[in-house]
Amino acid sequence: MKKIKVGVIGLGCRGSSLLKHILMQMDTIEVTAVCDEYYDRVQKGVEIVKNACEKTVYGTTDATELIYRNDVEAVFIFSSWESHIPLAIECMKASKPVGVEVGGAYSVEQCWNVVHTYEQTKTPIMLLENCCYGRRELMALNMVRKGLLGQIVHCEGGYCHDLRDEVAGGAKNRHYRLRNYISRNCENYPTHELGPIAKILNINHGNRFMTLTSVASKAAGLYEYVRENMPDDKTLADVKFSQGDIVTTVITCAGGETVKLTLDTTLPRYYSRQFTVRGTKGMYEEVTDSVYLDGDGKHFKWKEEWGNAEKYEKEYEHPVWKEYLQSGVYGSHEGIDWLIMNDFINCIIENKPFEIDVYDMASWMCVTALSEQSIALGGAAVAFPDFTNGKWQLNKI
Image 1 (spheres, rainbow, N blue to C red):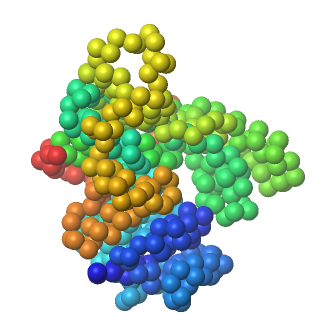
Image 2: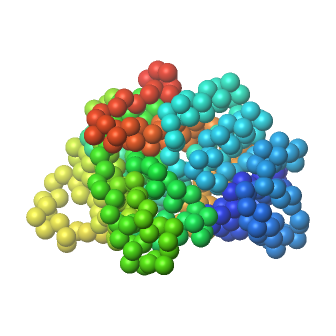
């Protein structure tokens, strides 16, 4: 079996976990180089590889050096949000297929740059949005494709995750979220919720995003958390966080659909992606893991039906998950990390188009930059760029 020689950039909590529990377990790749801006993390990455396969790989703090190494055929980028697009562009210029961890863009210009670089180099690039491979997300997609929910009218999603400890501990843990929450106010992590929705709405394939409006609540959660839980931390004592506790974003589509996104990461709450699909014949809702179809007649006793999505698995389980359940679900985040990393490598080996391409990447990541503009303008509507330059009308599913 052909193995792809890969380099890994970014060895923080996420990167080192993926290296150890996913990449080192794949028989289709050979990790040949690792990189992080902090040398101790580089050493940790080298140690992870050595423990897994008794091989000493090259370690460096220079990402550009890794990208241009002859023994690196493809690159995974797991580093900070700010570095994703610049490093991805460098990979494409070096003709190295690249998988990029999720996050938001810092400007619309960045998104255009990544699209233009791809169109000039034709080097494959994929946004590693694992939630597009989620079991319920793919089941809902299958339901939509088979017409069970009728004509789709509205979708919702959220990144609802109590990150107060992670953000406030950013200085100690060298985590990029802290500086972003201090200096920015935006929908800073849109793709977990938006990616699966974009697939359902055929974005860039017969449909596209048209406008965006975002508003943000005040920023109170982190300030209170720091005061109560980190009273001796003088560096954060007087910090004024810019990031609103709740950011609500509404997107309109060319097909007439609407999308609502919620960022909720600095108040106490349970984890949820709030994935919801509404159509003329029914709905799916992640919060209660429920399907409701027209004619069920139980809308006043709906709690009795909560959790009924299991009843639809036999008929509507997506083929990807049918096969995965038979072979054995593996790895972190309920198996979706393995699915997306494996898909990325297999597409390179088989020379197939990536499931999440550069136009998806630009369209989803630019939500962060557009939301920052909209919030600063008091919730004014801003226009989405058409990164396909009209090709969305021709690229039908």
